[in-house]
Amino acid sequence: MAYRIKTEDLYRWCKIPAEELVDHPESKVKVRMYDTKPEVFARIGNLMAEEIIANNKLDKPTKWVLPAGPMDQYAYFTERVNREGISLKNLWVFHMDEFLDWQSRPFPVDDTYESLEGTMLHGFYKQIDPALNVPAEQRIWPRVSDLDALDRKVAALGGIDTVWAGVGYKGLVAFCEAPRSPYYTITEEEYAQSKTRIVTLNEDTLVALSQRSWGGLSNAIPPMAVTIGFKSMLSAKRAVFMITTGAWKQTVIRIIMFSEPTVEYPVTLFPKYVPEIILFCDKPTALPPVRGQSKLV
Image (cartoon, rainbow, N blue to C red; front, side, top):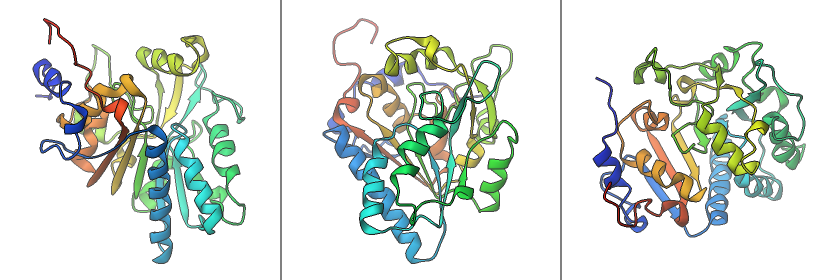
């Protein structure tokens, strides 16, 4: 029978004080907490640089899954790449996802909200010295024209080194969200083998994205996307989660730490398959969501 989070467990986790999360004996992941959001992203940017440097010394390719949000870590990473002359010629980047319109068509590539490829082109690749930059043919996007291409390349390269990811408040990674239909079920095992695919965004994701970027204007959020699946992401040796969006994520960081795998929160599958998980957060995001008195909790 599929595991579901019990209400009493959820309330118990959500009462744990922030200062007790680091090195908590029941945690399934490593937690790294910093006072402020800039401190989090500075450390992550340096961690990215350190992995490239280590693999370059061994003449090994580096294979990453990268998000088009959050973006803050890239400023620290690219500054160090340019300053130290760190070559990215042996880096393979598998991009997580791309927005689609309601007819499953991609938007023009541009520096706009709805073009994640444009966001990465302007906010990441164009910030890097061309002599050091990732070759264009090693920047792999999920494409509606060939949904299997990304997964084939990941398999051909022997899997992913590190997944760098934000996490949604209901546990999405990329646009891999919790299945919600009452008419069919997807098991944890099936979800773990999910491939690159076209998805319709869950309604609460439209609300969350519109609240964050558009003042609640949900019409501005594209309703569909093409996303990498869990099969490729769970081939990783390591996953680094970057969670700094405050009260929205206070519950999900505890679910990542303590829950068994469940498609209710897809991110919970990672600790079962990926050998090393590091969760970076700032202190406001680590505060317990249950802090006052309530007859319900």
